[in-house]
Image (tube, rainbow, N blue to C red; front, side, top):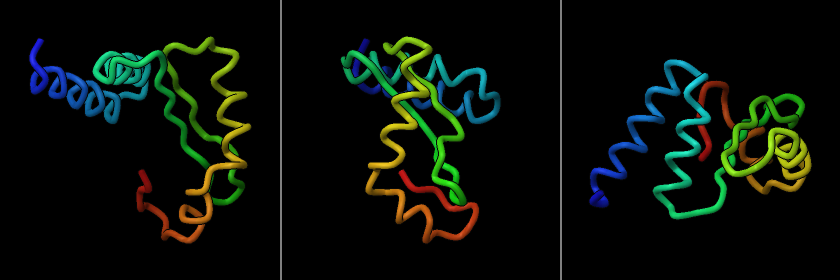
Amino acid sequence: MDEALAFENVLSDLYDAAVDLAGLPLAARSMTAWLDGDTCHMFALSKRTGAPLLSVSHGLSAEIGPEYAAHYAGLDPRRALVSARHDGLWVH
């Protein structure tokens, strides 16, 4: 598969997941394959508490994903940036 088509597939899976969160595992798998990686982990942090609200991964066991997110939520340097943003704005 050529690079442009592979990237288009990743974007398509991400857009599908935005409409239906059940598609996030497929999007993580597509991203992992596109990057030729071993794993992909996506997580969202609560602006109020800093706790993980969402943890989806490919290539990690179901038990490790939430622990990974909880551990790195406290270390993530973007956390201060997220806390300073107005509601509804994304940090990526």
